[in-house]
Amino acid sequence: MALITSVQDTINVLNAIFEKHKNNRICVLGTTCCGKSTLHEQIPETVDMDEELWPRLSREEEAYICTKPWTKEIGEFTQRLVKERVTVKAGHPIFSLILLEKFGVLPFEHY
Image 1 (cartoon, rainbow, N blue to C red):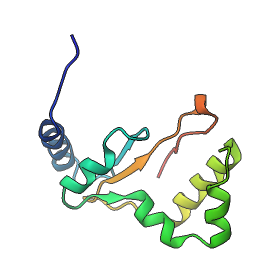
Image 2 (cartoon, rainbow, N blue to C red):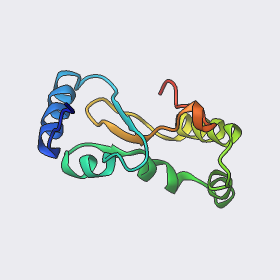
Image 3 (cartoon, rainbow, N blue to C red):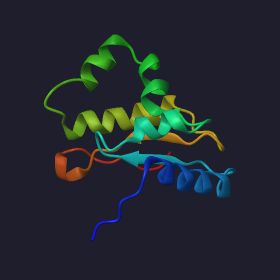
Image 4 (cartoon, rainbow, N blue to C red):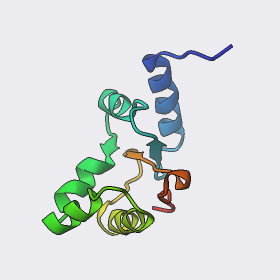
């Protein structure tokens, strides 16, 4: 039997985690279309990593990141840019996409 939770249940659990760890840096990772943006919109003080990173990219960097097919090199390049340009602040959890190695991309490591 699968466990079914509502969006509100998920928000309540995340808020409890965020409160408990409010002095730590928190990054919420998930695959494409799993509901990160929906949760981000419902929880105050959260940050979307794309909203933080994309305005800081040059046109060339953006074009390279959007190259298809996505490669391990593009993933490593993007990871370096995130580390250099996105500030993770305690009390402001960041929501981000994570692409797993089995899809040819390394996950983000330490922020």
